[in-house]
Image (cartoon, rainbow, N blue to C red; front, side, top):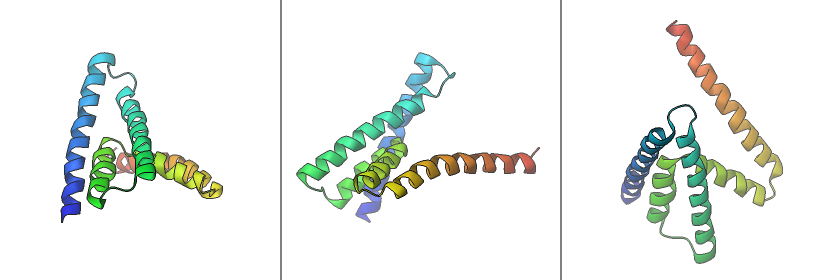
Length: 126
């Protein structure tokens, strides 16, 4: 139960932080470019890189703390940070085929799935 609460607490904080970035970015730059998403994706990737480095060099924290920060906080702030970690992990392990498939497949199939879902709604509700 503690694990679930850790993820939930981190997720609440991450979601609020992301919302804050969205509001600030719109106020500063308007809606012409998704700068808020770009900011959270880059920032989240940087933070997860720092955290992964800390964990690698100084030892793993408790599973609850790791889940609070990685799955909850950064997961709600941005899912792109996890995507970055997964790709770098595959690359560093020398799994270049899996790395290329995951990288390209996630982007291509992710965008394709979005377009397909959007298309289905347009068919159902023209």
